[in-house]
Amino acid sequence: MANNPGLKSLRLGLWIAIGVLAVGTGLAALLLPRVSAEPVEAYGAGDYTLVDHDGLSVTQATFASGKPSLVFFGFTHCPEVCPTTLYEMATWLEALGPEGNDLNAFFVTVDPERDTPEMLKAYVTAPTDRVTGVTGEKAEIDKIVSAWHVHAERVALENGDYTMDHTASVFLVGPQGEFQGTIAYREASDTALGKIRNLLAKS
Image 1 (cartoon, rainbow, N blue to C red):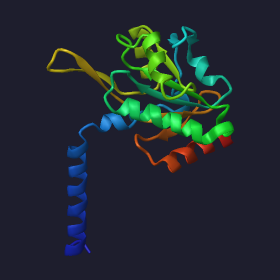
Image 2: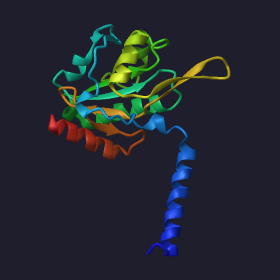
Image 3: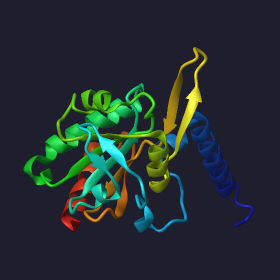
Image 4: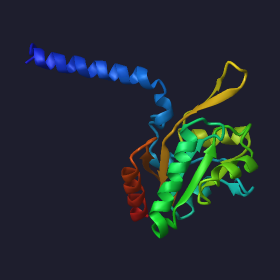
């Protein structure tokens, strides 16, 4: 079996495919939550105080309000991932209709330097009135990013500006703030809706 040329060829092809995928994406950290040894119930737990796009306080308790939630980390200057995900969230909420009335949805900035409450409100409410923007002082944003095990990194651009590398998955959160899984970036709509309906059913 060890000398089977067909098996060797299959293994080689698999490793080549993995290598091409890794090089081709180059931004895998953007697409998945950071791998963490923390138990799932630890996701989101922490002492942070932020504000939503209407200036209301946001803390850990906000995500344990008794309603399930979708939670996404992004920023308003994002060229593709964030606007795409925001509009997908709007599409999911519209598709759910009354079935999703008890579902909260949050867009938490990883770029508080530029994302004021006013800017976030204009951004997140453009496609839907169902998503709440969340921002705050950088030290508090750092706390919530750490609490959710999110990758967020400032990257300098050649023109002197900057962008943000960040996790691109949408978090599925239970009514008491418990982590229930993720929806991947550009995941098929039917699959995403199935995950959300499962979240609602368990809640």
